[in-house]
Length: 191
Image (cartoon, rainbow, N blue to C red; front, side, top):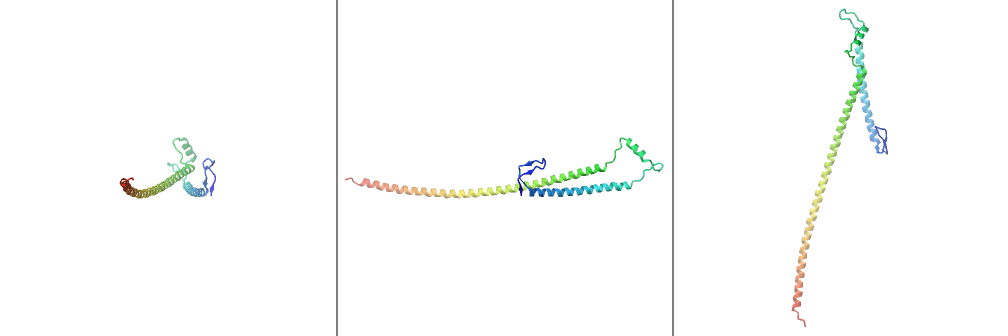
């Protein structure tokens, strides 16, 4: 079914170009399946990262003073670390998730570009093959027409030669006849 008008996907404005809703439906279904796969991959990666972080939290031992081996005050150490401007905090889970999301998006974009390039190459190859086929057909047609014209030319030249020969014969007969008539006229005495 062809819809008379379609909304522009980017701007949301109506366009005057007809679209094929079956093709759009297939594309949307394919994109939805791809998005579902990507979401599943992303969720699995995020869950794995979160599980790894939570497993690491359970295994943390209470900090101890290295010299005495006794527990130290964590609050004092946190204050000391906060005062030190050169120490950076480790990457947080949300930023790791964002980085992972960006990585997945970049990978997805690379895959889509590769697919588009492959499809474009297929279209180019198909167009080249079609162009070659059309050129071969055109060349064959040119040769066929040229052969027909050459054959017709030979027939017409033969007909011209035959007509010239007939003309010469008639001319010769006419000359002989006129010569005979002239001879009779001269031999006849006018009385």
